Image 1: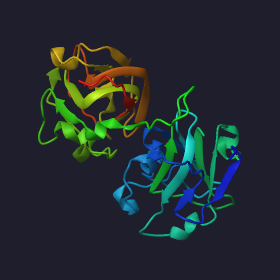
Image 2: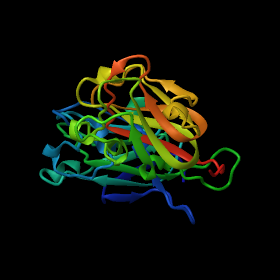
Image 3: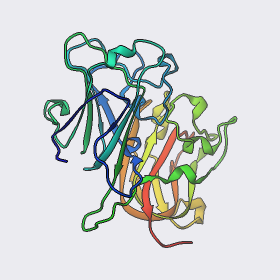
Image 4: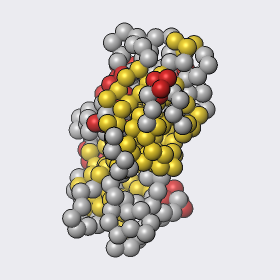
Length: 297
């Protein structure tokens, strides 16, 4: 199957490539979403928040304005062998709006990816006066590293981890950041007290080669996360803060999800710390994408 793949959205589940003896994983969860326009609170990332809730007022669906050729796109951050795309339509109203939509997959951003006949997965409704709403888009794929013949599954290994943090404000404990939901409302996020060097940590329970860490920031006071560091390693010295640093987070806007590449750093512990100031640390979701390193502890 070539890259010139265009699929009419006739069913909720569209099989694009069928590999033998593999179990695809949803790689959209680590992607970066965008869309042609925004209506209300129907932000693009709502379609890759891991939540198939189809009631639009509950805040888990996308929504464009009424326009010509509205589109939604997810950047998978790497060229990926797509096996299937699953779409959850709005369930409370207007399901017919999605009739005639097309799924396009390819490596080109020409015409916002609409010309892709797979790093980019695009949903577009051709025509005038159209509104595009998606409650969830899942992109199932296998990842094959260069020079290998067998696919290696890269998935969110934080979901099976054990979370901890330096302190707890109210009932916002550490596990909320690895519950699989990118909801940016305070009720679905972690929250420390106002400490110096506040930290949050997930124990992956084994050593992984970490390719990327994805963080979803809160819907308010996003600047609190400015300057936070992601550290990865096998040591619990100083609560894991002394492990090697992957990145310094300059800023993640409110309600946004950013992905940071960690170049296959190895470690069992993923730590987020705000160094050298007294601050609250809040994370609405933290995802860790990687593969087992084989260095079992």
